[in-house]
Length: 424
Image 1 (tube, rainbow, N blue to C red):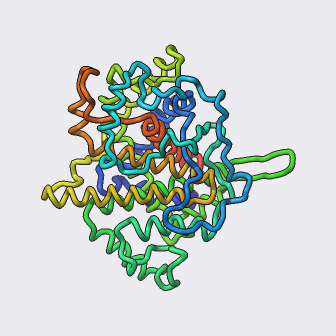
Image 2: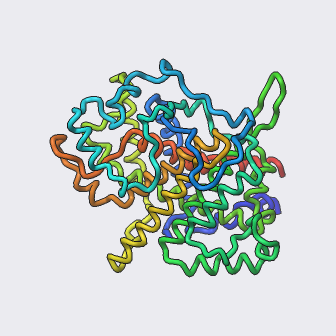
Image 3: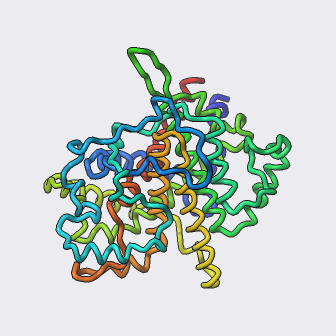
């Protein structure tokens, strides 16, 4: 009886393989929590990865935003110039290595084609662009919720996930009551299962990202707010509202399974990116040679660990078949995700906008890597040749930090399991 109650949120997760891949939850839990998570957290605390340059005052391109969030916890504190290491602020930081010539930078810029990107990348040279210390502006519950927050996710799911308007999502607050019941749920999953594997995967990535963000908000919830103290911590009730099988009409476990699917996709991208980061000219430059070398070695260790994972997602199952149809499908998915990254500029809460932009950019970078295998394999052994594949500093920082958020979510699920057991 005890086991049955505690595992209500997780019973559907613990039944072996995930959909559309050969991996299981237990393997991921063990690999992430025991091996990868501690190393990744140490890397993300380094200067190279903690300072992220972003433009937070872009206008929403899709609708007129009524106002910006006035809650104090929604605010983002940007860095003053002297808080950011000189090596990061110098012009050469953008392309990772300090020893690059201006000619090489121009070559890389020519290659860095917008047609290869799955997400919007802010212009780092814009006067509106600012450095933010991610460690001092952590992702957590800010109080931002209600119709404005739902409008963001509704726009993502309804307009960018290839779903007809006639097919209603389960628990969609904007649907008619009848569509949230069993009939609407059956219709949605019948529609989803009838889609090609690429469109199913796309929906699951977005759902997994949504689940991960909700786990962060539940794990760093404002539990106490007084004039002398703020206390952040795990909110079990909030977690159950979002993920308990009974309280979500069975949707919670599906959301968590999609989180694990997202983990596999981003883990695979890290493994595929190893040859790029193994290049001699790729340095995590901050201007402190010993620290830079140490963190480059730690990054390579993490990527080697990612490569060693025994049950990777097989991306060759995607975009197979007729070449023209596959190319069109890939472009449709690229443009949909590009659109989702633009929606992040419509988030009224600046703290949520910061982490939304970073995590969508990180996932977009992972997709760019995943479908650039030929270009990565063609990387030149000599720095005298123009590279066939490139990542700038913004993409690298977002890639590792976004995966850090997913890795943290997997780790937090272990914490919530323990808390649920104690609560019972």
